[in-house]
Length: 392
Image 1 (cartoon, rainbow, N blue to C red):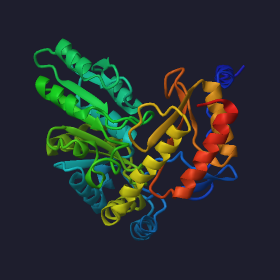
Image 2 (cartoon, rainbow, N blue to C red):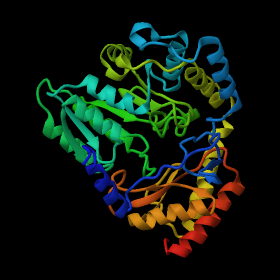
Image 3 (cartoon, rainbow, N blue to C red):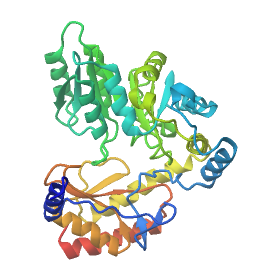
């Protein structure tokens, strides 16, 4: 018997419960329509909100940077891997988020986990929304701080937890997603900011699904609510609306300097290659030059949501381009995702542990580059498959 044979039994149990994941393989470039596992489908599974992941300007910038500066940087940032373009991207992102400074990480996940772990100690406390992203949860655990969780979007409960956990000399961190990735709803950031200010707590927002999507020019949740200067730490990704790869932290200059010295993912991972950085810089230019992309994203979102509601589907509390279709039962949800794929629409099943048991769903995300005909064709498929499975 092999040392890892116990995993075979656990995998079989996941399969039996409808919880085993079978990732599909993208063949070629991503986009509103793409080819997965040999089938051309309408792609409602991507985080490519603004349709930039295969934009000609980004592709050209990435190619040019690779030719001029090489395939990789060759080192971590703090040794020999900080390039001029890294500094320029950080300057541009600070400007984009209306912050004093910014720092690029290798991913949105490491941005969250590395920052939370770096700014707190075991003597401190984290007050976190129940549905915050896994990277926030992991960062909280790595910090060794006390962790208190408040019910989803319950500002009063967050206020009470900050009161209960206050101690002389103890730092408190109040943290929330800006847009919640599985439900598509928006955090009650104004109320949370008031609570943080009341208690002198650090306010941190993970804007992974809001950067490029909410606010003027896609500046994010802080801009959406007009809270500039009142949120200490803004987190974001370069892999969703920006369309490339990486993450960032935006905030005061001394926070960024501290993370350059104590942010473990920053310190111990090779820096992003020139092609990635150049494409991210170009993405910011495209967002500035083509504001109609953000407008199309929201008009497409309205069209698709209205269509799902007219068909009687449960989309939960979604307020953004993330629109879940909730069926509840894991096995039914897996069948729904499979049948939709067979009908030419790709939106994967999301099941436990990504969401709670009994709240399984297929998650749809529209993008700026979906056409009206793409979305109406997808709605027709939802109508056929929903009727077939009795999911409404």
